Length: 207
Image 1 (cartoon, rainbow, N blue to C red):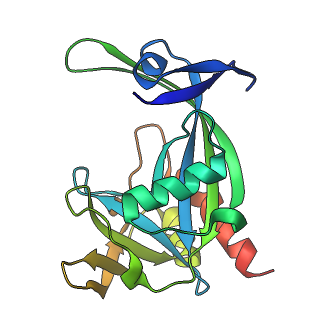
Image 2 (image 1 turned 60 degrees about the horizontal axis):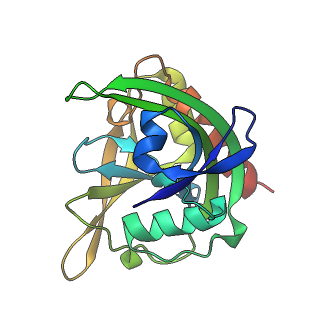
């Protein structure tokens, strides 16, 4: 049973509840969107096996009693198999997210989220990632400045790198990344979804 801390609309903590009930009853809770970048200005996007699109480096719910930074570290370790030092992770911002969606069985999935967006430098070797290939198909690295230009144009391709995990070793190869490869939901823009993260990375590296 997974317990989540729950909050009122102003962010005041009001208790804990089971995850299934949180989404059934539209209770406010916290998630973390985890972004890794390196000193060369590349940002890591995860490509999920099922969806096939590029999204956060990792993301998930903050569990009851857990800090956001602790959740950052746990999600990176669970999804990518890497234990990162998250002490230096920096906040980009908190986004209030609301979604109501009907499930296949006719029940409703109701999301009321304080999404905490954080970035953290990855200063290790990419061979250290050990993600589950049944869940994650690859990590894709793109240059933050080039990605911003791409999202401004909303069309075209940029160069990138792809990390795939094998049984014996990871492979890193050069690829072309298309604008259409990035997850952008209906009513969103790529710049609105990812722009603040990319600008934060650029700001940190230019300090």
